[in-house]
Image 1 (cartoon, rainbow, N blue to C red):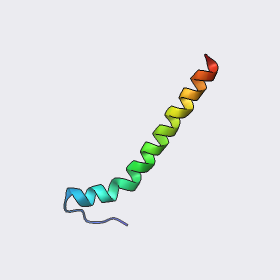
Image 2: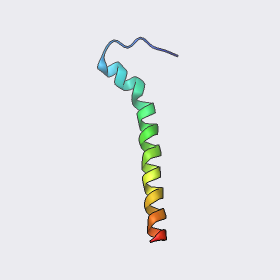
Image 3: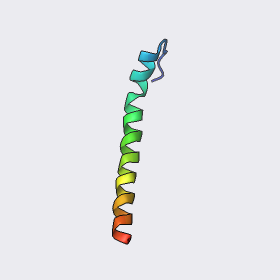
Length: 41
């Protein structure tokens, strides 16, 4: 699974799925907490 990465473009391609997943999870948490606080207040 591990690939030899020689430049930033390859690094970007390798990390893209992980970054997208992390951003998606964080966005979901933010939305969930906003909704939670809106209901609570």
